[in-house]
Length: 450
Image 1: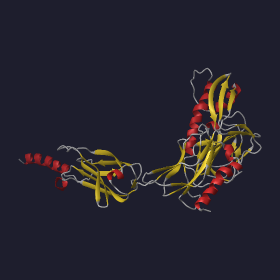
Image 2: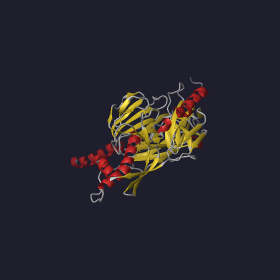
Image 3: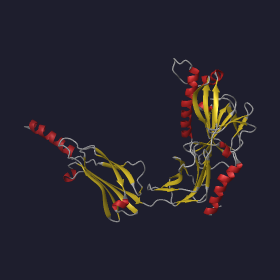
Image 4: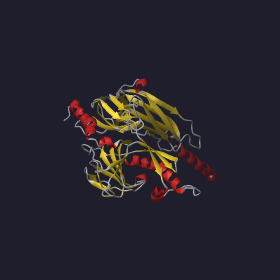
């Protein structure tokens, strides 16, 4: 009898303990950004879990001015007697306050979840989470301060604007590329300066506009008076000799088909194509977090006593034994002087890279602040270290023929954010005054800043 009673009691106790569990379900907001405010439209991801008896019900609502607006209420199938029900669910909700009749202002975002436990007289364990939020459906305003803009194809522009409210993401879109704006240059922290660029292959008709996204996700766009000047770039033809291949290719550790009839040529083509792309992708990583201080002043300085050997955006055909084997676009200018000549920093900035860099050989990269960078390639040696602040004309290294270079020279590039631009603009004092300094002064007078 005792044995039989024990055989009944033990399973009964197990069932009771299992079904009377006191572990509350978990419900959280899993959106990519913190849920602090909701704009005209907000996508929210909610995750709910209960690892014991399973989820019974979920309710998501917004409480404002004493009114409860249910966004979603979902019930789940009942758990089996000896098992669990639905242990996890993810809900995707699009919230549009105006359609729900919710006005702007402070509110509570309430998340509630129940499970199938027998606790609380079979009502289950309950979790309730309240998050304070702000309903803000008004878009930020963008006040353009810098006047009429003129930008060359493959060139740089500057836009200065005031925002009506703080916006973590703001800047200029040009031809699909985004260029962030930076505050701190003007006394008014709501005034931003943004250097933007046009790629060499984008001319008149390219869409360019300022944009700002506030904390609630409201997006504002603002065009401005702009003239894009069309430019034609030079075409060049380069003959590749066996002597050049023997001199340049062996330094690169790159594999080609072992049965190739001309491995040096195949390696060169692979370097010129694939390594070039990989190098430019790596450059994008290096310039992701530019300095939020504008270091440079006045015109940038060039390699002294140098001859210009190649121009920006030259379209190059590469020929071997009279046959076209490759085509690329030259993203900088080539300057040649005496072998091993001293290379000056074009302007004040912070060294962000020093070392070997694929087709550019020994390279130095300088961050001039606010998304502007200068690149110095094919150096024979460098005299700077990463993190060092250098002044204009400071010797950063010496010219050479490292990387994919046929002879001693400097490859000089300028980048705005991740777009290569024509360096000759930045080396021209008149261009700086007419297109950059004057715009800053216009903005100062318009905004009342000094």
